[in-house]
Image (cartoon, rainbow, N blue to C red; front, side, top):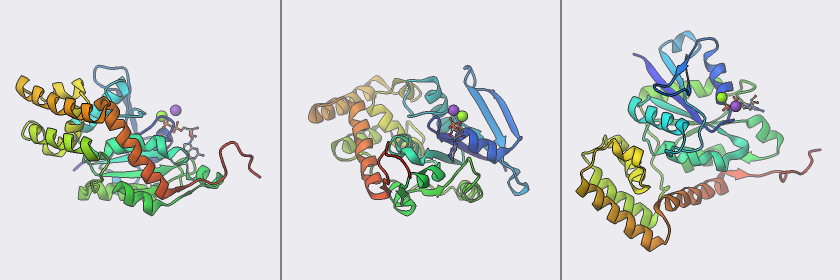
Length: 273
Ligand code: GDP
Ligand code: K
Ligand code: MG
């Protein structure tokens, strides 16, 4: 049976470099349905992986509905349900890259983080505690230098294992406090209207008033207004709009993760010797 693994990450995280390394010349390029965003698919190199297809997703910073690339990526993930996600992140820019990671984890699809640019991280004198990062995210993290093909074999093996075992990430508390309580109330209201695996993701999207995600659920007007009441109450209490509330929760979580796992070496801009 064919195994599908999606490759997701920020622009310039090394996605193309990794994709080329993983698939060699076994690539098929087309367009995503209805849009002119490039769609690249490839087969993993190596006889033992002949049934493994890698789907390259457009480079994105978020799963919000504001760009074509974001919508293409999230629609693929939610409707095609790949067996696993490889989330490639730029190790020299962890904070920004983890913003997408927190959203991908909410999709409840088995995921592995490929911590790329490790050659540069080392050169900069930075230290990343991979075990601490992995514990904090609730999913496996492997070090990688896509440019130098270092760590690719271990990444592939682990990603394929994950896809076969369907082992999901441990759910971590990214959204906390009143926002979490509101999201959980919305989850109760959405039960039955969505695939259970995507309950959390849809509840957060509903809380953010993400129309594109919600129109797929075909909720009744009554249900929609119940959800709106929950959102309004939370916004009033936290004195912020719901989308910003979620963004703030993500960044608070990410700051906690990086304070545990990342030690910066030389300050940026300082000359290396
Ligand atoms: P994409 O936008 O995510 O597809 O990123 P690319 O694969 O195009 O990589 C962006 C840039 O980073 C290119 O110049 C790559 O050569 C470089 N790059 C990718 N991976 C690594 C890595 O592990 N180490 C270093 N030093 N550079 C890398
Ligand atoms: K690029
Ligand atoms: Mg690219």
